[in-house]
Image (cartoon, rainbow, N blue to C red; front, side):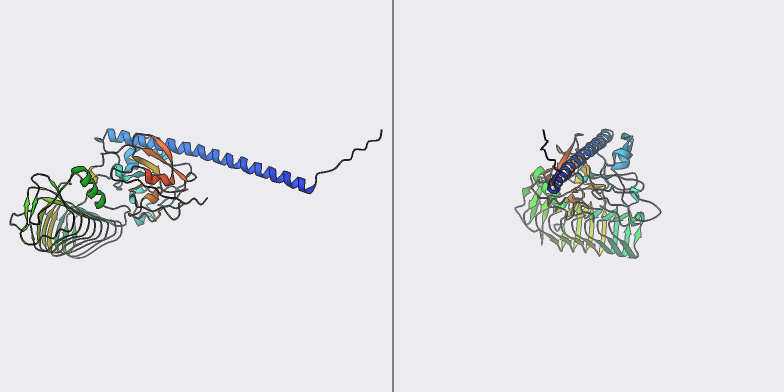
Length: 447
């Protein structure tokens, strides 16, 4: 019987369909394989953060409950502090997705460090990080450190006239001085330090150190309000601490004429403080009070205060003043005239002495481009989540952690030792501190 079957080859279209199908299946397989490999790296990163948290907890057990700090002097920040509690720290401090070191600030794919003492960026002001690399940073709110200077300012510090300071002075921006100024302490600055004239400094002078910054006065103001329930001041002539050591003025504080201060306490002022005459003015000698002011503070007369001054704005001292306590400013500090400012006891509500007071589910270590960070609710989403906030601005520190390290997520360990993966937008939902107000943000995804 004659075979009538005919044999045909594949058409070009059929071959193309098969090839496209194979390419699609290969792409899906490779993507799945790549994602599986990334999940493996995420698991390793979570294990690293868990180990870091356990080491920090062990440190706190042996240090009266205080967690590692961010003082950032050689041997005095979290990495060297926990080294004795983590024998594998050099490996545990590196995320497998960001293990290669950068020269200083990291990125989503680079660790911060290493620093070489023989060249930059060591000369730019990171000597404390010499020889160290890490992919992680610490939540500074857990322990802001035990370094409390006499004066701490976000803005520039300018000192002139006939001044005596007994304590350290620190500015996130820069320090300048010109006159007969004696400083019995050290100077630390996030920028330059320029002293001329007859300025004398007994301690060290260290410029260009990142993260030299004071606590937030706004957060401190809110903490005192929520914790101590201050009483409203009802008289323009009397501030009476006898019934409640916490008093509050809802507007400006501009004492003129005679004002009587009864007892000792803390005065909160929601506006500005402007004192141009003698203070205290009732002849009682020295006022025993702390001032926590959301606005600016100006002393232009004869002021004598035994207590600390916290100004959310600028602070100027232009008269013959004696102050015994800490000074914190969210703006600039300017002083001229004749003044003696001596360090006193740190108030109990200062966050720098409240480091051991943890909140539940508080972040401890995170994927980061820098050694630490103090996020604020108003911090913006970084314009480039691959680089994060690489300028290390003290007014935008969430960006140090908001980086595209694990496909739109970062890993976070907490003060209870646990570690979890958190989407970038949920970083603003974490309880960074007792005063942090969680809220929603949108993080654009660009991969």
